[in-house]
Amino acid sequence: MRCACVAMPLKFKSVFTKTRTVKAVVIIFIVSVSLRAPVMSMFRTAWKRDPKTNVSSVYLVKQNSELIIRFNDALNRGSLPMINFIIMIICVCIIKTKLYQASLVRNSQKATSAADPKQEMEGQDNQGRSSKDLRVIQSVVLICCIFIVSQLPFLVYSIGRLFEPEFDITGRLRFLVNAFTGVSRMCSYINASVNIFVYYN
Image 1: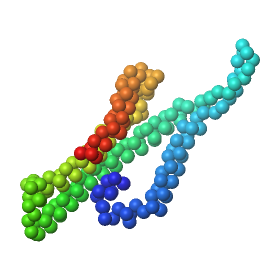
Image 2: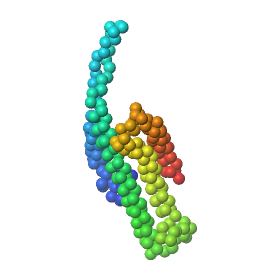
Image 3: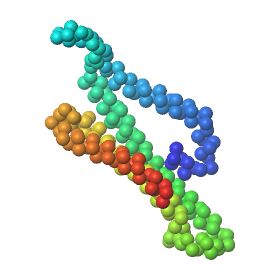
Image 4: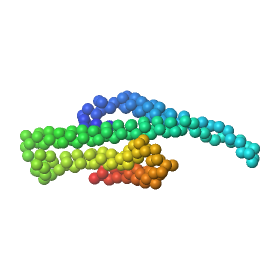
């Protein structure tokens, strides 16, 4: 939506209407819950008796956990994040192209009109784009790129779990897994905290 808002500003309101947005959010919610349903169904409750006190208590029991975890890794942590990652990169390329095209159109229109001293003070590059246009392009692309880079460690970790069974918190490569988990968490925090400075700038 952020990319679309910049790439097609005059059409955004007619494409992302209130009704369509509500429907999209509801559909995304249903799909998300459906994809997580196998993981949530992995546990069941059972009674366990303590032989010392002869008191029974409820506890959670895993069933078919290995199969469900493999399914979750393949779909929710593997293929879907990879598809989203590719879509995000394509969106960044599209938005960059659209912004460059829009700036060229604006500058060609400025060239036909009378020269404005204020516009001349801003300065233009050799392709006729003003420094203000370039800052907008750089800022929007930077925000998207920060998100892409911040998601990369999680994607590498998820793909690694698919191809290497030992790449798990209980496997032989658990120290490497812990390192990737730490880097992924740190990147998520950085992504959440630096956006405000990019927007401010």
